[in-house]
Image 1 (tube, one colour):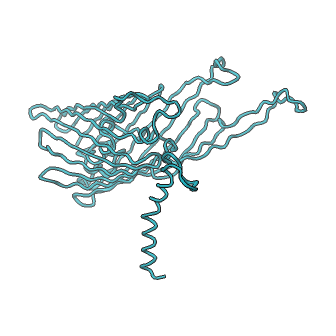
Image 2 (cartoon, rainbow, N blue to C red):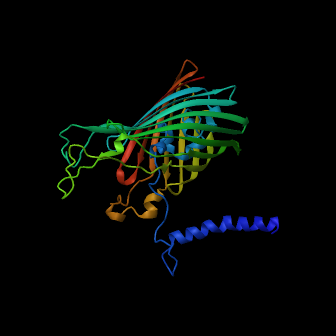
Image 3 (cartoon, helix red, strand yellow):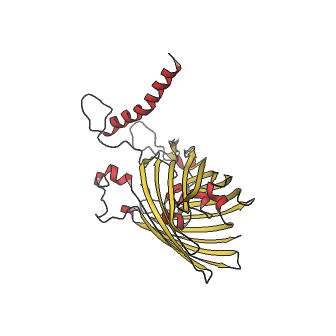
Length: 389
C-alpha cells in the first residue's frame, strides 16, 4: 500500500471514528446495536483532586478560566504560567475561601519577573480540607468515643516562563499533590502524585488596543490512588455455627482502592480591550475548555478597571458566567436530586478589587469574589496582595 493511501486512511479514521463512537454513546438505543446508551457517557465526577480547580486569587475566581489571557499578576502561577514575564514586578498573595460543609481553601504564592521581562519564576502552595469531624460507626452511632477525622489536600507548584519574542511567551508549572483523606485516623489514607501545567500567550494589538490569545493545559500527569492503615478493617464474626468467636483477635483485612486521574483541562481563551488608556480599561474575554471529567465548557467574562490620575488608588469590577454542562447534559433532577429554581445563577461569578500605591513602587491590593455553584449554594473568596517593582 502506497504511503499517500495509508495517510488518507489514517486521517479518515481520526476524523470519523470519534464521531461514530460519540453517536453510538449518546443516541437512543435502536436496532441490534448494544453499545448505544440513552444518555451522555461523559465522565462527570470521575476525577480525583477536584480541589485543583478552585483557582487562586479572587480576581481569577470572578473572571473564570478566560482570565488566562489577561492575567498579569501573581495569579499567573495558577491560570497561565506563560504570563509571569508580563508582570510589572514582584508580587505575593494570600487567598482565603470558606467552602461548603465547613471546609476551607487557602492559596498563597509569590512570582518574580526578571531579566527585563525575558523570564519569570514563582512558587505557590494551596490547601483544601477540614478537621475534627466526628466519626460515626455502626458500633458507635453517637460518637461516644470522641473520635474525629479530617481531610487535608495540598498542592505545591513551581513555575518557570520565558518570553521568546516580544509578543509570545510560554511557561510551565510542576506541581506536587498530597491527598490525605483520613487525618487523625490511625495511619491515614494518603495518595501522592505529580503533574504539570503548560501555557502559552500571544499578545498583539487590534485597532490600537491590546488583544491576546492563550492556550493552557492543566493537571497533565498521574492520578491518585490511596493507601494506608485507615483502609484496614477488622472483621468481627460472631454467633455462626461451627465458627469460633473471633472478637478477641479478629483478622485484619486491607481494602484496595482504585486510582483516579486528575481533572485535566485544555483551555483556549481570547481577550480584547475595547477601552484601554491610563485611566480606564475594559477587558472582554471568552473561553472554550474541554476536560476529562465533563463535556466541553463555554464561558466568558469582563473586567472594568479605573486608576485615579490625581491619587494613588484604583478599583475594578468583574464578572463572568460559564455554562454548566454537568447539570444541563445529565439533568440535575435525576435520581431524586432537586434542581435549583428556574432563576438559578449557577455558573455566575462577580467580584471587585481595590488597590493603593505608595512610595512610588509599592502596591497593596484587596480583591473579593462571589460565585454561585447552583444546587449546593454559593461561596466567597478574599485575596490580599502586595507587590513592588
